[in-house]
Image (cartoon, rainbow, N blue to C red; front, side, top):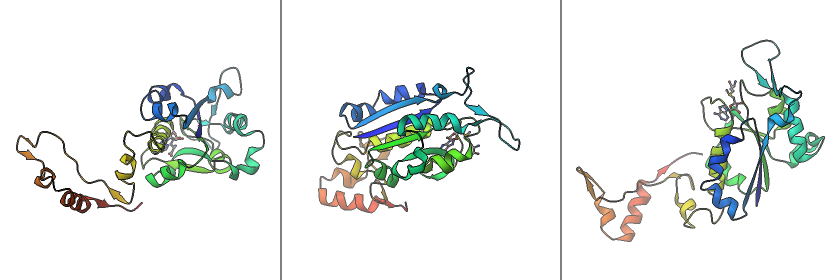
Length: 222
Ligand code: SAM
C-alpha cells in the first residue's frame, strides 16, 4: 500500500481525476491512499495568507515556507527536517529533475510519498532545498501550478500497481516499460480510405508478428 499526501492550494482540482481510473481501481484495491491537504488550512493569519512578495523584488508572489512546514509537520511531526532522509517529500518544480517512467517504477515501491504543489511564482527556495528530498519537473515548460504535474506523476505510478490495469502484462508491454517505445497498433477497419493495416498483422503468423513488432519498437534513452 502506498500512502500519498498532497499539499495543495487547490484540492478540488484532484477530485474528478481521483474518482476515475486508474486511481479508482488502485484505491478500491486498498493499494493506494491519497490524502489531500489544503495549504490554506495552514495560513498564518485570518486572511488566509500563504504567499508573500519575494525578497529583492520581482513580480508575483511566492508560497511561504512556514505554512508548508506546518503542513509537513502534521504529517511527519515537528523537526522532521532533521531526519528528512527517512522520508520522501517531492516538490513539483519546473526546474526539477525530469520525471520518467523509471522514476514511476521507483516511486511505486515506496510506502509513503508527500507532494508539494507550487502556485503563483512558485515557492520559497528553502522549501525545495531544505524541506523537500527531491524536486520533480514533468517537462521543460511552465504551468500555473503543481497540481497537474502531481496528477501526471500519480497516474503514472497508479498504473504500475499490480491489478490496476485490466491485463497483467499491459504495463510491462507498453512504452518505456523497458527502454523502448511501443510498436504501432491497429484496429478495425483493415482499410480506411486507402490507409491500410500492415499485412503482417493480418497473417495470423504469431512468430512473424512478434518479430515485426520487435523491429518496430524504438529504443529510447531514459
Ligand atoms: N517561477 C517558476 C519558474 O520560473 O520556474 C515557475 C512557477 S510556476 C508558475 C508555479 C508552480 O507550478 C511551480 O512552483 C511548480 O509547482 C508548478 N510547475 C509549473 N511547471 C511545472 C513543471 N513543468 N513541472 C512541475 N511543476 C511545475
